[in-house]
Structure formats: C-alpha cells, structure tokens
Image (cartoon, rainbow, N blue to C red; front, side, top):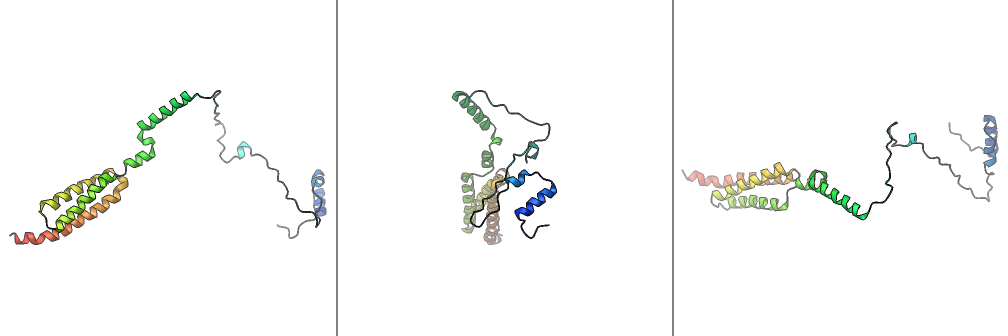
Length: 185
C-alpha cells in the first residue's frame, strides 16, 4: 500500500524504534526543513555490481584472462602485423563484405550495352529493318540478361526490366512482321 500522507520526522523515528533499527540512522537524518532553508537532494549511495550481478557475466568456471603485453611493440613490428593482416584480407575475398557485395552487383559497363541492345532491337523491329537485325539483337541481349540473372544476384531487378523489354519487343515485333509473312505465300 502507498501511504496517503508523508510521515513527519518524529513518526519516522518512532517507526525506527519500533522496528529495532540502529540509532545512527536517526542521528544522520537532517533536521526538518524550515520554510527559509532550501531542501538539498539526498545522495544515494551507489554500490558496485558484483560479478554475478553483471548483465553479461560469463558462465561460472569460464574465466578467460587476457594478458597485457609487458612492453610496447615497435613501429616496425606494427607495420609488419598490418601488412600480414592486409595480405590475409586480400587473399580471402569472403572476409571483406564490401568486396563480396560488389562481386554480386552488375557493373554499369555490363548493364549499359545490354539495355542499348534490347532497346535497339525494339527500335529495329518497329522500323521493320531486316529480319535478322532485331532477332540477333534480341538473342545477344537475352544472353546477357541471363548472365546478369544467374551471376549477379543483386542486379536481378535489371534482369527483370530487360526481360520485360525483350518480351515486349518479341510480341510487338511479331505483330509488326506478321503482315509481311502473310503476303509471302
């Protein structure tokens, strides 16, 4: 239960005596504040946490001691260790996440010609160029699109856009060239 009224210092002293607490609490308690004296905030005593109370304390019996080096490393030994670390990162590309993601992304030098070929195939089909021109452009852009889809997983959205362009070129190119095939017979 929460008390409705604050206890006076006399009532607190009587409660302490009833509960049998030590007398030094009453002696250390400040005098009741008068209207002229400002109230001082009480200081809380902070005790350090024991190892068992720490939030990330290791399990019992698994204490790992890390020994600090007894002397500083020289600039030459630091440079040598940095060199070894750099070589190990360079030789193991999976350790570098940025390089791994870069490997999975299609480079603009690959994407730009693929888009140009797909759009040129559509333009050639619309202009009724030779039969072989749009078909060869579609085949080349389809092969590049398949390569992007299979090898460059982070650029599959480009492969999807290119597939839509290629399918639209095939459909509308087929509609454009259909009358030419009907008169050939």
